[in-house]
Image (tube, rainbow, N blue to C red; front, top):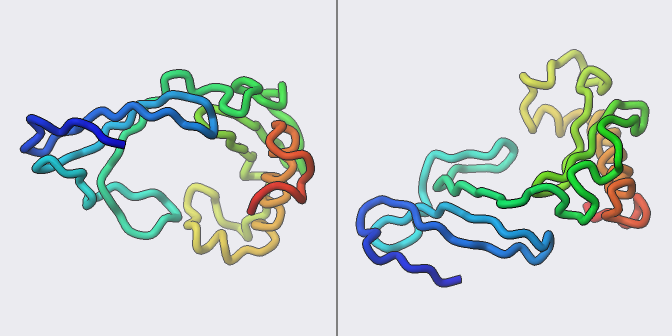
Length: 150
């Protein structure tokens, strides 16, 4: 979209209102600009994503229920999927939180494991993928586990 950067000659943020067509939700993005242009470079990183870039802060005005079924789209605070205790939460996007102690990580603690190390654990990755697919069905995002996008 187009947004006004007048008066933003120095390093400042511009607030951009975004309507997410997928979730039917409004959010505000604080986009850094320099000399009237969006800032691209920065030290913001996302684990599992290579490189870094400018930090864009996002504020969801009503984050719960983006899939249309509320903050807890399965209706449960906690449930078992594939033998692992999980919570399926829809707060700006649907996420599945798992009890890491119930997933075999080859002796690693979840908070100390890096994405490449986890990717190298095929059994753990296969289990997490099955959980993700089943959670999508329970949350009403997909009609079957096989129809969940990769």
